[in-house]
Length: 414
Ligand SMILES: *Cc1c(COP(=O)(O)O)cnc(C)c1O
Image (cartoon, rainbow, N blue to C red; front, top):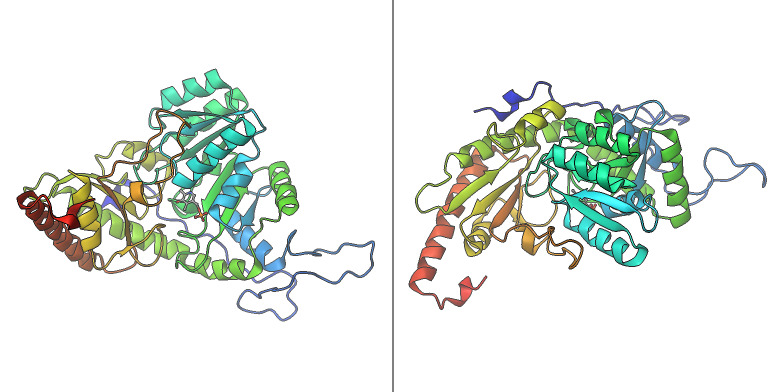
């Protein structure tokens, strides 16, 4: 079955490539302005650029490209930061001390860790909600009157889908800002700003860069006032992305639409084939979580608001040891945190990217289950990946069976 068939529109490829404005040599590729300062004509005159912490031509060019990709519109803009977390910190800092922030329950582990710090240091009140229940989301927003609401959709790794249009409506009615972490899909597949969000953050370390060779983050907003506020704060704190990393990121943007489209198609094929094996005797495969599957929870909402479900899926096994064994047995998937690279990766989120859920943040926020394995599908041939997945499923089962015969096997202590 073709999971792409459910989505009405094809992936977007408009991260427009233009030559750098004002380049006297009309270079075909983006020039790298690897410079800290720019000469001023007079001490009292600031030209377009004066200091790279504030602004830099290479970085500004890449920011315009990403703003276009996310649909920031005429007045909007994007700001690049040293990492996704730096962009998230900038966005969360818009909530004043003591403010309430309403968040979806399944969030990136680093975001939860930062929320824990903001709660402890600045008295930010974090109220979490099941983001898949849009009525509940609206009720909580109306009741709590938060300064900021924060959602991912689909979430990483559980694939919860939030109705972003409904969340935006509720936020507008309550005078709250809505921020969406769009790292999983990017503007290629979903534009939260067009669904009503005020702010989008993306870890450019993932698909936008796409080659596992840089860390970067970006915040994108529709309103010039908000972009200006973020720019002022970024300059004050000095958290902007360095010019070289921006230049490297530009190469990623050149192919991001092609990569995301192909990786999403492969993820759909793989999720469909693995879903057919749920319950097959001896594999211990309990569930395949991928919002692109037609019977997945939230699939209809996703089809309404996105152009595909992305390249990340999760497998739920019957026990944690099997999950660990399965991940270790894969040969074509590198065991690594992060996703969205040209190469496929596998992770066990509860032990890796999501190991850091801060204690006391909320009794309803928990790390993902230990028997969950996350796959990020790269550009390899999907048939080869499927063969590798098949042999790892069998190898994991052999290991689990052997352990039952010999429960003292030290290799099986999780
Ligand atoms: C990786 C990730 C981040 C953090 O980005 P870094 O570039 O690693 O700082 C934030 N949100 C999501 C959804 C992510 O996957």
